[in-house]
Length: 138
Image 1: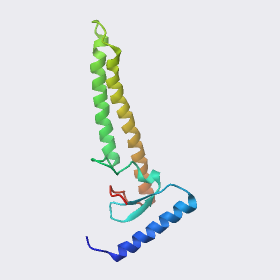
Image 2: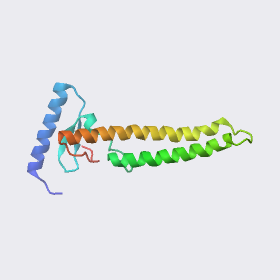
Image 3: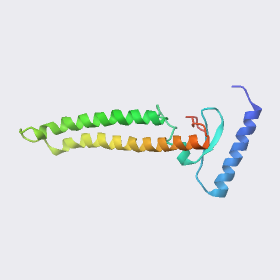
Image 4: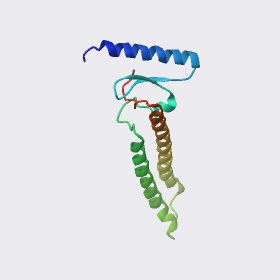
């Protein structure tokens, strides 16, 4: 990587502005490198879901929408499979088998919540002209 003095000055100015905003307003802010390579100070509602950590991350609203649709379909299928013996007149299976579809439905609800957070953050970033955050830690 080639050293860029102008980029370093912009990063220093952004870091100073970030620290000033945190100190003066008391708002929690996230200093992160954007996908365009620039350092940006985001409010939590502009940043969206966490992008750091191990493994692949869903970083777009469309990614969450697709994931929620797939997880919802799997949840419905698993619930139908578990509910089928209860509809049939044979002896009822034990009630603990309902734990599995409840876990799938809970996971779907959790990712629907993440989807809404990312959709709102995406909308705020577009309104405020901010670039999308990247996965790089600062």
